[in-house]
Image (cartoon, rainbow, N blue to C red):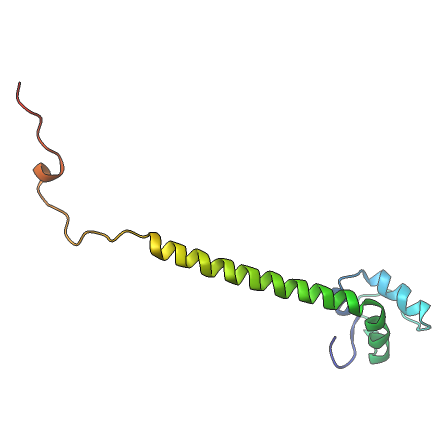
Length: 107
């Protein structure tokens, strides 16, 4: 979490829980706080929230890191595959129609 005080809605976003869950948790820890998104959450409150939600937050961050690594690796393999599957374009295309389409034989 951030170093200093923050707003309730930012703390809820950071821990991926509702503001009402944060208010209930803080009240159960002995803090008094209103359930208003713009209310300030103190450093002490953030420490209490980190004790409750910190493990889940770290697991979520680890999962997100693994997901990003997977997509980066996947995109690397896709770009290599795409680079090797391109066929070279001929340098010159014949201008004569006879070369492209042979004439039908006379009957």
